[in-house]
Length: 123
Image (cartoon, rainbow, N blue to C red; front, side, top):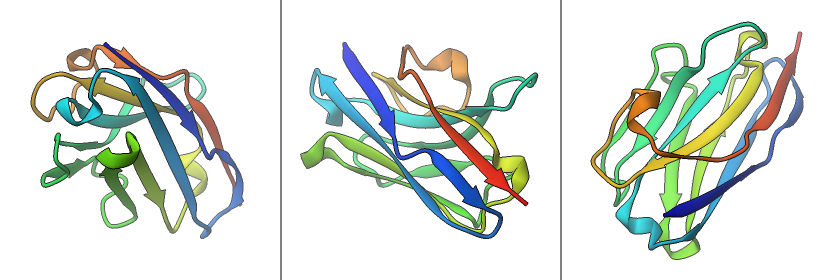
């Protein structure tokens, strides 16, 4: 299995940028697809982005397309989420997830989760 720890969250004004990191340990990280999900207070957890094992294929939720970029550096056992042009509606707890299969967008498809990092965007 793999353990995941998110970092990089914080408070940013609308229009600003933030980069989240997800550090993995345990089994070889390159064997896992990875994803980012977020959850705003009182809302369902929402798909944000996903990336396959070698980083060659990515997917994004409609609300973040063109603004967020997911990437990974398997040599560092880390997946990133670069967030640009941030909006107040991007506020929430961001979770990193991993699965030992192909790329997916459903949270139920991911068996390994980090504890989350808070992202707050002010107007």
